[in-house]
Image (cartoon, rainbow, N blue to C red):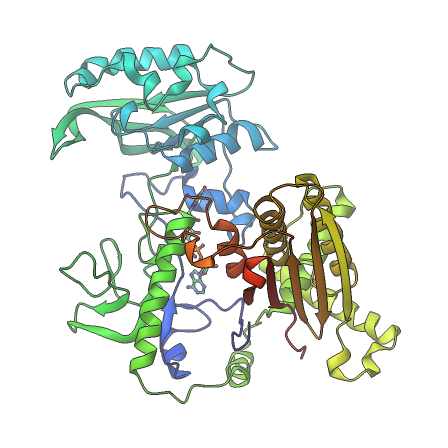
Length: 536
Ligand SMILES: Cc1cc2nc3c(=O)[nH]c(=O)nc-3n(C[C@H](O)[C@H](O)[C@H](O)COP(=O)(O)OP(=O)(O)OC[C@H]3O[C@@H](n4cnc5c(N)ncnc54)[C@H](O)[C@@H]3O)c2cc1C
């Protein structure tokens, strides 16, 4: 994207390579923090620092091989408690019971402070692990709590129509670890055994009460003991307090507004009682409790509108140029990763996966990743030198391709065409191997042309014209249909439409390409993207 400069591998924060004060020293017109919710939520229980006690985020980052979590000890035992019963619990239980290559888990116990009717997971997600549910154990647990549920008007016999539709299906328990639930229980203390590893979790037993129209947990005087060797807290996410902007109980502090429609994205300093001019927070970072990609993205888009409005109001600043910023970071020995570097890394990881016969391969530590980028960069450079390209003037460094092809309006032809075109573009180095945005946009454009434009009529053809030149790629997809009125396509990011599929294709094309235009009444879509920056 023109005028967007990427400086990767530059952590910002009070103890990081770059502080916010240094960032402000670059004199930007505005700073937008879209840093997510990277903090580790602590519950404050006695024994919480024992071995084998993890936060869900850290644990997921570990098994997804994200540095630095990938190389830390996240050993699991045989009996694992997961505190919280939302989608993250389901993800983790699935990994423990199905995907973990070591298969050490024998029993996974999901612990909830309220009852089964308050489960927050999605039924479709739960279907992935329901065959592991220990039905006898589950019925026993329902029996244990049914009177407390009845006290707030909940009937366990209706559970199959509500959160646990698995109960309406025949028992189909598969071999392997069992999944149990422990309801109406809040963690109270963690007891460690020899070696400092957790040996049991003490829970406070709860009862249920009606409070402001919803069901709340109320602690009782009784406790219970659950023998486990691992506990994972999946109880929501929290912002990282070391970033360096004011934080409050529920996240980074933004300007308070009494009007609920007047969402605030500007960071507020409660001590000075004023906003921090030009400093914004968006996405998951602003709403740490709402961890869904669609919600974070929608929030960030609305936040960006606020920033654009702000930029219209303020005079231009004399900001440091990208070159000056790079120099500043290099002087501080920060190893900056740029966009081509990400491509080099993707290539090495892809090659390594092929070599090891794996579906994918990821480096699990920073140093190995940076070294791989340097090796691949050097290799690519010597390859270019070998075939004489280094003597060619800069504008010709990148290959140039122009092609045209057509496919019949059949769903099956879409994938083949996308795969063939992307393979050709990758192998001819018109696009880096890590580039998948173009593939997504092309797939959506072809899908729209085949399904909506040509209405799936196999006698009609979809034509693709593609040009790749000087690190830029443009693709035009045309169909033989009547076109459409762009203004009538609903915005899939509007509140209430986040999960709607109408308009999703156009939205994705616009999100993943730098420019998208509809021509000839909508029967031709033209898209352009800059894929390679000028190399240093
Ligand atoms: C365990 C787990 C499972 C989840 N499962 C799902 C799911 O199934 N479906 C779903 O929709 N959502 C899921 N989410 C939530 C989803 O990941 C977030 O809602 C979404 O990623 C938020 O997007 P974002 O861009 O605001 O923040 P992020 O995706 O977190 O991006 C923040 C970026 O900022 C960078 N960053 C952070 N701090 C700094 C710093 N100090 N300096 C420099 N860079 C920094 C990070 O490296 C990252 O690249 C899950 C979250 C977790 C923890």
